[in-house]
Length: 272
Image 1 (tube, rainbow, N blue to C red):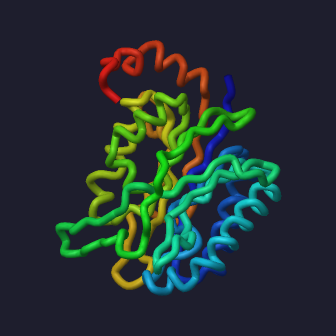
Image 2 (image 1 turned 135 degrees about the horizontal axis):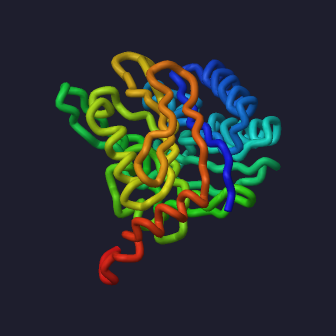
């Protein structure tokens, strides 16, 4: 059993990687100073801008992001999630990859987003992530982080696919990470309720780092980075400004909730 603080960071990333990484380090340092041992950066933490620019930057940005995560994890002695950054995938496309790095800079797990955001929003905005992003080919991993807990990875749009989180829970995940750049339009109605549902139905903690505010052009995100407990209680909410949501993770509490509400054990054997 373990008990520790987790920090879901909230950023307003732009097309300027230098400024974005400086802002990310500022929040990582703040989280570490406040006692966080698990720290998560949101999707697109190093760059939010035009697709073509992202494709051009991807070869250097991918390497830079990985180095940044290793340096930050070592410097501040935290387990650090890089919630999503572009990695070249060939033929004018990238993967949207997150990486989880340990306190000694070791890569604990990585995941390439499998569900791509191809959606026509009712406000008239169209998103076609698949135009420049290639889906990953493997289900997200669950990793045992020594001294903390078992952690399952995911990215943003994945949150709308409950079977993915059932897979993570079945693999023993106690904390579900959902780094995101959720649109402002859908976020106001869906963000918190989806995250609470994933926590409740899997009796697991959810930590959801988020993008917030206006990034470039019309791209606006919802904010409200959250830490949620296995009962669905919101433990911390970062609101709308850049900052962090800091909440306690207690695996003994998770075990108690799973004993009191044993829905994972009551699943029909033929269901996923």
